[in-house]
Every structure is written in structure tokens, then in C-alpha cells.
Length: 406
Image (cartoon, rainbow, N blue to C red; front, side):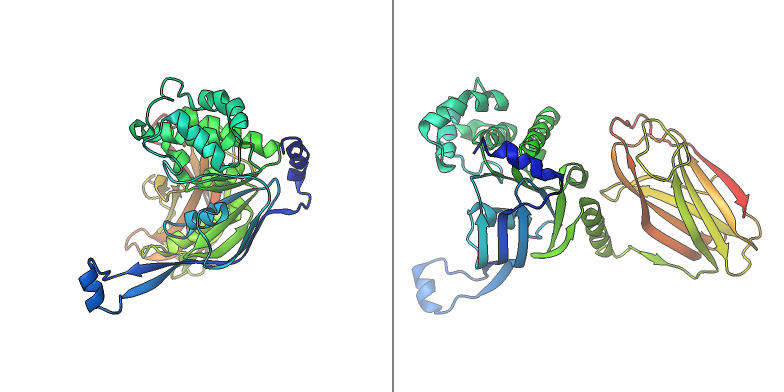
């Protein structure tokens, strides 16, 4: 297998390759018992137990090519972990078929596959045997597993005394050292410390270069964008969206926002409209990430459909968790736009933007300064990235406002 994998690595440039994972019409049903008898007498008295079906997955069709890294995303309860368990063979689908090619290593929920009464050493051999390794192969990999997990002093202790971080480190170390063709990773990496998470991501990137297939479940949407070739969004057990990670991540955000009763995608009375919005970097370009300590200009062109004399222009920048990062408005900056009879351009200049690396969404709004009447709002229509290395070194972001007649 190891000799074949480097050749597979050449497939990551976009060439068509055969599927490593094929999922055809997969559904998974669980039975939820509402009044389950607690004794034999109760069971005899009640001939029928009340139960209802919960479909965790419905009609899932999916292929993952050899050498591809797929991100599975969705809200809690969408079926991500269930699908991963079905791929791993831990759960059998109620309907449909799953086919995999090559050895599958899965890192699922915390402590999965470990026997609490066995030592770390014994669990390494136990897990490796589950994955098809002989004792001799496990002995060859053992020292690398322990070194990667950094648990040299604890391998002869029972794992029931391990912390959550120790369990994750040992589980991941085993999974990546058994020469898997397919690696399945659930959200458990969030348990490890920052240094270990970086080493895990580095190892994932090594696997990508070697052409191994990876299915990655996470709520860290920026991570999906950074390391995945493709993303799939599950919603109530069904495939809701699939494609480029940026597009699927954006769709997830919109679905989550639509579930918020306060979410307004775009509306207003339209006495004044947002004509055009541009997010300008320091060099005047509209593409690429914002660098460390650079300025960002949010440029809003407004067009009146009838005369207005109390316009207030505002913006809000939100991170991927929908938390407000920075906002501003012309009235707060002491800028009075006066009577508006023609097009006007408003620039909000954000000095030395101190945001953490990641993707951010921008909402732009027009309203009455006197009454608060909403003329026009575009909620999270625009986005920009902050480059790696940026730091949040202060809470206040200076916002300067410029107004120009058009």
C-alpha cells in the first residue's frame, strides 16, 4: 500500500480518479422508544411498545475520489457523525450500500475503540489488530505512535485514567500510523491543545501529498476552506449542498441564519437603495486577503429613488460564528449626508484591521437617521479574508468616513 500511495498523490491536481468511497442511497434509521417496559411484567401487560422512527440519514448519494479530502459540515444533529460511522463500518445502513477501497482508519468520538481497563500499550495493539495489522507490523510502528502522541511515560497506565487530550493524542497517533488508504476524522481534534492540533493538521497535509483519501467532520469552517478539496453539507440527514468549500460554507451560514428569526437577507422600503458595494484593500484591489495591519475600505454607493434628507449608512463585520467583530455608521462618525438628490459614495476606512485570521462577512444598511426606518439592507452579502499572522491586539478599530458626490 505504501508504495502505491505516492503515485496516487499525483491525482490531487484535478485529474479524474476512481472512487475510494461510494455511497449509494444510504439511509439510517434509529428507533426511539417512548415507553419502554422496565420489567418482564410490564412487557407482558403491554403487548405493544410505543416507538417512533428517527431517520438520521436519508437517501445519501456520495462519491469520494482517491486522494481527495472531503469536508462534511452541517448543524448539530445533521447526520455527519452517523455518516462517518456508516463509512467506517461501525453502523450498518438501514438502506443503501457503502463501498470503500483500502484500509480505513477512523478517529471518531472521544475514547472510541479503547478498552478502559487496558493500558495504553495494550490498546495500541488492540486497535492496530482491529485495523488489520499483524503484531509484527504493530511492533514496528509502536515507537512512532508513542512519540507522536507524546505519551512515553503513560503507556503502561490504564486508559481510564487518561485525560481527554491524552485519549485524542493516542487515537490520532494510531490512526495515522497504520498506513490507512482512507482516514476518517471527527470533531474530536478540537479537544487537543493548539500545538497538537497544528501537528495533526501537518500530518493531514502529509497524507494529502501522499494521495490518501480523507473525510473530515468539523464545525471549524475555516479549516474546511483551508484543507479540503470539496465540501458536503448535510441538513436533517440529507445532502443539502456539495461543491467548492467556499460555496458550501456560505450556504451553511445562510441556512443557519435563516433559522434565526431576526435574520433579514435583503429588504427595505427602497426610498434609497444600495447601488454597489466594494471591499477595497490598501492597493485599491478588491481581491485577495487583507494582510497583517492593513487597512480595509468598505465603499458603499447609494442611489436615491426619491429625495431623502436623513440618510444614515451603516456596516457590520461578522465572523464565521456570526459574532460581531466591528461596526460603524455615518451618524456615529458625525457625518451628515444632508439632502440626497443624486448618487453618493460613502467610504468607511478601517485602519490596521486587528482581526484574527479567517473569513468575515459584511452587512450594509441604509436607514433614516431620525426614525430608524429601514430603507435598504443587504445582510452578509459581502465577504473578505484576513491572512494568517494577523493578530487582535486591540478592541477598538478606528473607522474614518469619507463622502463623495457621484
